[in-house]
Structure formats: C-alpha cells, structure tokens
Image (cartoon, rainbow, N blue to C red; front, side):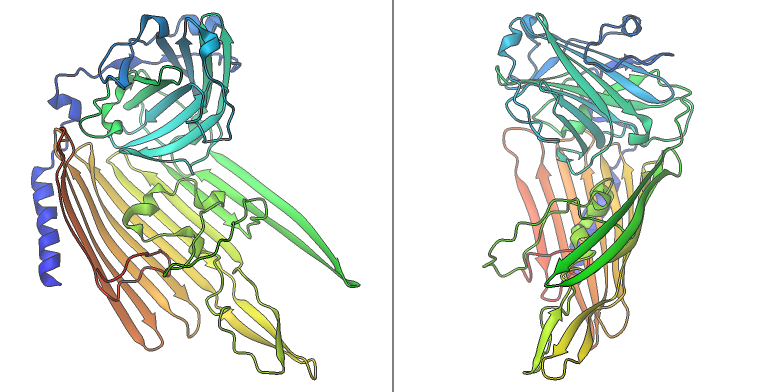
Length: 516
C-alpha cells in the first residue's frame, strides 16, 4: 500500500512542476482566439424568435464560422452562413442567431422533450464561461423546433441534469431560421467585479448535411472542447437583480379503503438565494417529491445493488462539484431504510407497515467558485427516523421496530483550478446515524492536469473510506493514476488502478467494483 501511495504522489509532484497559471491552449498554437464585444442596451428586445427589432441594429454582428465536423477546419458554406449578436443589460444576456439556409424547407424540425436536443432537428448552442478558465461552460441549446436544453460542461463531458429558467423562441423565413434567447443573470455565477472577463462558444448543427460549425475554431484532435472558447468583452458595470426564488407547496391526501378513512396535510418550501454573484444557497424544507418521475424497477440478477437515476431537482441542479471523486450518490439520501429488508417477525406476527423510503426533513447546499478559481461545495441533509410496525395476529398488539435512525449526510468539496485547464480537488463525505448504526467517512484527493499544449493529460486519485460499525472500524483504500496522450492519431495510455477488499463508499456513494 505504501508503494502504491508513493507512486500516485509522484504523479502529483510532476503535475505541479509542469503547471503554468497563465498560458492558455491557444497561446501555444498558431490559431488566433476570436474576440467579440457585447453591446449594452437600455431596452430589452422582444423574445419572439424574430431578431429584426431596431434594438438589434446597433449590436455588433459576429460570423465566419468554422467547421468542426466532418472536415475539421473548413470554412462555412456560402449557402449556410451563420451570424449572431450578443447584447446585455442589468437583468440578462440576450443572444440572436441567424442560421441562413438557401433551402429552409430542408431544415429538419423534429420536436423533442427538454434536454433531448440531439434529435432530427438543426441546433443552435450558446456556451458561456463566466470564469474564462477553459474548463467550465454553461450551455444553452435551442433546436429548430424550439426544444430547449441546458447543461453544465467540464472538458468534453456535459451534464443535462442542470436545469434553469431561460427564454428561447425560433422563427423561419425564406432565408433560413432564427433564434432569440434571454439568459437571466440569476442562472449564471460569476465574480463580482466591474469588468467581466468571460469567454464563449457558439455551435450550429445542420442535420441535413451532417455538419457542425463553431464560431471559434475547435481542433478536434487536441485537448477538450471547452479550451477553444472565444473571448467575450464589453460586459461592464452590470448590476444583477437579487437572486431569490421561493417555491412553496401544499398538498392534502385523503385515503378511503375498506370503510377506513384518513387525511394527511403536507407543506414545505424550496429556496434559492444568491449569497453573492458567485455563490448560491439552495434549501429544501420537508420536500414533496410526488411530482418527479417514478423508478422503473427491473429484475436485478447482478452481484451489485440496483440503483436509479436522480429525478429530484434539488439534487440535480448545481451538483457538478459533488461528483468529484465519485463519493456522492444523491439517491442514498432518503433511500430505503437499511433495516427494512431483514425484519425479524415471529410466527404469529405480521408486518403491517414497512416504509420504503426515509423521509427527508431538510437539506441545504452552498456552491460556487471564487474569481481565483476555487470551487466550494457544501451539502447537508437530514432524514427522519423510520419505524416499521408489526402486529400480533392473536391479541392485536403492535410493536415498532426502528429500521433507519435519524441520519445526517454531509459533503464538502474544495476544487482549485489552475493553469487554465487543470484542477485538484479535496473531497469529504460523511454519514452520521443516531444510535447503534453504522457511521461512515470517506475522503479523496483528485487531480486532473493537462500540459500547456493540451497534448498530454495526467490524472490521479487517492481515496480512503472508514466505516464505523458496532464491531469496529473498516478502513479501505483506492488509488488510480493515469498518463494519456490527448492529441495525434495514436493516443497511448498508461494507467494504475487499485482497490482493496475493504474499500466501501456506499454509505453516501456507490461502488460497483471491489478488490482489484
């Protein structure tokens, strides 16, 4: 184990020795980084998908898109030019897209649900990076059928579980199709300063031609997508509104079965508050998840537990930081009580009530990133004590069996970005249960380093789990270290992977691989 840890730490030492905090990917190439200046406006445009209002006349036009796929680097077709405009005021950013097409009837327009934007329809995407760090983007999509999508991107991966409120409309005429977007500042996070240093990218997908174009050249052979943003200047002295949203709910449930009636009343509230321009507080008090999608149970014949996707908005929006190190699986919070599966029942007893989920009492999370690139994520959630009810069929007496105690779940993530396209994170996850139940604590150090030219990547993880059971402490380790080539036709990779027999993050995370 000592040799494994030393081997992994050598990767950390090499990465920091090679780190550079000022050089960007495009500084090391011959490709010029485009610069676009946004225009401040006093009257917001009407968002109707027709960007021909007089307000747009004095906004600078951007264009000259470059093909990303299939012929990377080719100029756009004269018959399919793309232009855009970006304006702003103290409330929001406004984007206009002009997708010209000599044959607009050929534009595919399949309608789809939210976030399903890669269907049989043309696509417009506005990607913004409010920290200009070549790592993170907030992406807003609109298809030619005006199906919307939004996602958080890091490198080449994007998470569509991120959902915010923004407006978009599209229209068509004989010259092509158009899109207008309004992106409120409350959907973005950015440092509090007079002059904003942002970057952005614009994507156009033409389905009938099977072609993709971007405003700033994207070299698909080197680095990651987020490293090829253009610079967005001109956004100055903005005074964003108070970021406060309240979502109260009230529900009444009346049951009548076999002559027996019961009524229950529930009330609660979700809150979202912008502590600062960069940090957001989310809270939920006695939440009601009755409106979320249900789980489709399937027959599980594998050696590991069956898990489901997260459908609760509180645990999907703004949780990208908590995924560092794979120690957090939000469905653990409010999961099936751990003691509900193996209840001890006497021959003359029946189980008349055995809750399948622990009630979530409240949860809060604080997330954001400083202008120095330090991402901070804090999450705390408490679930209620859960009891099963067992009845004696002879004398009718009942007894309560505790299947899950009052439980506190905690996450802390510190993620420092450096060198414009690298990061190192410290992660802690803990589960504290009241009474004689198992407690747990997990820790991870996660490194992701790219060299200045983005031709090589080094990643490393060191993780330790501790489970404090009534019989003693179980401590497990997992380590991982990788070097891989990220450019060229041949991309070799050298990796080390290790998990010992006692590594178990399952109290707040999930693990499908053991002892390898």
